Amino acid sequence: MAAASSSDSDCGRAESNEASSKWLDAHYDPVANIHTFSSCLALADLHGDGEYKLVVGDLGPGGQHPRLKVLKGPTVLTESPLPALPAAAATFLMEQHEPRTPALALASGPCVYVYKNLRPYFKFSLPQLPPNPLEQDLWNQAKEDRIDPLTLKEMLEGIREKAEVPLSVQSLRFLQLELSEMEAFVSQHKSKSIKRQTVITTMTTLKKNLADEDAVSCLVLGTENKELLVLDPEAFIILAKMSLPSVPVFLDVSGQFDVEFRLAAACRNGNIYILRRDSKRPKYCIELSAQPVGLVRVHKVLVVGSTQDSLHGFTHKGKKLWTVQMPAAILTMNLLEQHSRGLQAVMAGLANGEVRIYRDKTLLNVIRTPDAVTSLCFGRYGREDNTLIMTTRGGGLIIKILKRTAVFVEGGGEAGPPPAQALKLNVPRKTRLYVDQTLREREAGTAMHRTFQTDLYLLRLRTARAYVQALESSLNPVSVTAREPLKLHAVVQGLGPTFKLTLHLQNTSAARPILGLLVCFLYNEVLYALPRAFFKVPLLVPGLSYPLETFVESLSDKGISDMIKVLVLREGQSAPLLSAHINMPVSEGLAAA
Image 1 (cartoon, rainbow, N blue to C red):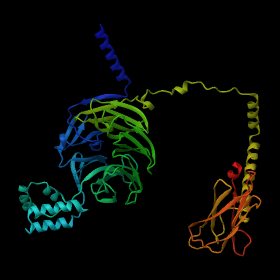
Image 2 (image 1 turned 180 degrees about the horizontal axis):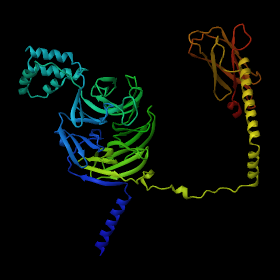
Image 3 (image 1 turned 30 degrees about the vertical axis):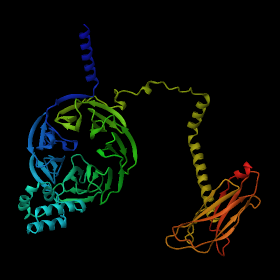
């Protein structure tokens, strides 16, 4: 009986968890043999029939035998081998012609392979880089049999350690060979020209000239040569080239190429660089305290995952907004966008088998999986709009569908009104005075508004008159005349009875120096004493602030203070150019005595 009751309670708990979950378990295959990352997953309607398929750039078990797989539902539709490990996969529209079927771009090695209707359409190769001249000269000598393979290896190793230009693949492969294999390799390759080729590290898409979902897009490539390339979607020529201080590993783009766009690149040096249209170099730099493991843009916030098991939110100018600590290491990240509810959130797959969904720093939902998730993708799959696709570390495939009634709320709780909504507000009763005042405002509203406007205009008039009077009497610390553009401010330091008074006088003109100025102090001689109450000002160079220092001695022992007026004069003129009134502090030294 006890065992039966225990099994009944376990079944009831499982049913309640299933009922409270926001996700439907559509498919789980622990031996699907899919090994990939989030950047190599893409969802698209490849045939224009409304049936969205999953494109997977599969690395293969142990990084061997990479393949391009297209899945329809839980089954593999097509499968083809790849010449090198895939770096990223993306779907984009190349043209406006009907039918509007997207093309598939797969970055692998130094090439981007473009497919239309799952058939090879175009192959774009990165431009070759100039080889190292010293390396070229060594292979020319080997071609003429002037140096032996052992000497060639020693000199190539010296170049690899010191030269700024890296060696070609041919030389790097030669340095890995054993002594017995070198001579045959040199004989086979010495007549070939040296080619230095970079590879693609990351890829994304950028809208060309419209922000619509079905608009034409450009491909944006990040290369091992620390460059970003923007490709034309039709001719596949390089439209723009930008340089970075380090190798990009994650990209995020917003805007349109022909209008205005902003590009964020997370690099291997632990920094995130922000570039804008027509900028060949980064405009802003976000310095991270650890290496980035993911980059996702949620509305106007850049969410970055780091190797310190934390998520950080930044603005596009590099200001940190928030930080959330994770319970385990972050393995992958991606964007969750629910169009029907206007929701954007970030998904983070953790090493403890959890997938956490955050909106800003608020936890919305936690999904627990049998194995650690290494890639995430959310979007329309088949004919379901909100489908979550996950691959695990052991090669498994998990497909979940978001319930149509599911609503993400803060804390991952159930949807509904907040608890504070059920509390009754303690609204005071309306008094007789309140009622009378309401009736008076209702009856005399026009007259009250006119009175308010009259008082407001009088206030503006008095303010303008006071400002004009200050300009005419030079009572302001900034000169308004174009002949002597000056600015003055004063700083008082000390506790007393001796104060240090520093005047900062600046010539604000563009290119004309000012000469022949005087500074005069007006003060109460009963309260204060100055060593110099009148002195000349040196030549004022434009743009520089000149500190003029003097000391003020407080003579009163009654703990009172007064004002000291500072006048800046022109030689031969009685009217000051500008003035400042300094409220002196009370001498604490005399007060304490």
